[in-house]
Amino acid sequence: MTEQNTTPETATTEANAVHHQTKKGADLALAKKAISPDSHKAIHEGRISLEEARELGREGSPFAPAKKAADKNDRSRLCMCQCGRETRGRFATGHDARVKGWIVKAVREGTLDELSEEIQGYAAERDLIRQTQERMAAEERKRQEVAARKAEAQRKREGETAAKKQNADKS
Ligand SMILES: [Zn+2]
Image 1 (cartoon, protein in one colour):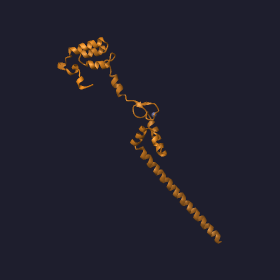
Image 2: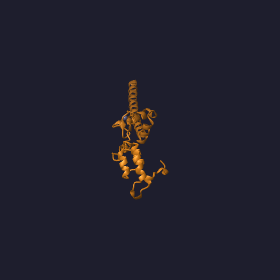
Image 3: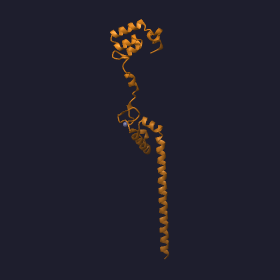
Image 4: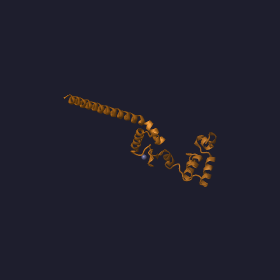
C-alpha cells in the first residue's frame, strides 16, 4: 500500500464527520456482503475506515476481540532439537539440556559440523564450544599428571629391583 493510496475517508477528518461517500460505500459494501453489519455500524460512527472494514471481512467485527493480533503475537515455532514440539522459545521445556548434551558430545568427538546450523549457532552463542574444549584440556592435563606419577613409581620400583639384584649378585 503506497502513500497515494490513502483513501479520502481516512484523510478527511473535518470535524470528525464521516464523509457521505464513505457512508454510501459502507452501505454498498454491506449490501454486497463485503463487510459485516458491525463494521458497517462502525464506519457510520466514524470508528473505522471502509478499508479497515474490508480487511475485517464479512465475518469480522471491529467490536470483537482482536483475534488476528493475538495470532500475530503467537510466535510459536518448533523446538530446536527437532522433536516436533511447538514452543514459544527456542526449546520445549527441558530440551535445552538435551541439545547442550549433543553439543558437548559433538565437540568431544569433533562432529560439531554434523549438527544443524541453528544448534551450531546456539553452541557459539552460549560459548559451549570453548567451555567444552577447556574442560577437555583440563582432563588431558589430569591424565598426563596421573601418567607421569605412574611412570615415576614404575622407575622407582625398577630402581629398587635393580639394586636388590646387584646386592644379590655381590653375595
Ligand atoms: Zn525438543
